[in-house]
View (tube, rainbow, N blue to C red):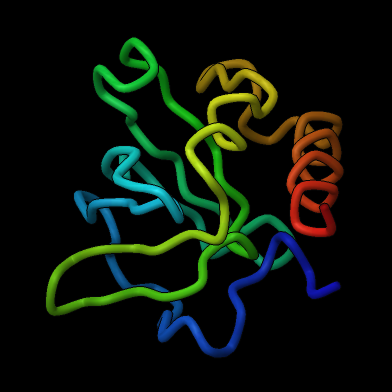
Length: 116
């Protein structure tokens, strides 16, 4: 399995590119917009504002879940379903950013979903 915390070479992502505001598409539909993101080596991720979809929550998606970035349409496609994302460990912006245990928990969750 590829590194869940790094972008796949085929995504079209350029380090340092601003992805804020891009729409995020799961395999079965839209899940929200990018609120923030990080290109940090070993911890690259997207924080997605789900709006009303999951009652205004934010979710953290490891960069390895991204399959493609369409800069022309400002869309990011991820290789997970809405249900997989909704069932992910809860994200709390203030509590979890920089928390190695949380990153490990997410890596295990999303890695397991990918193998399923």
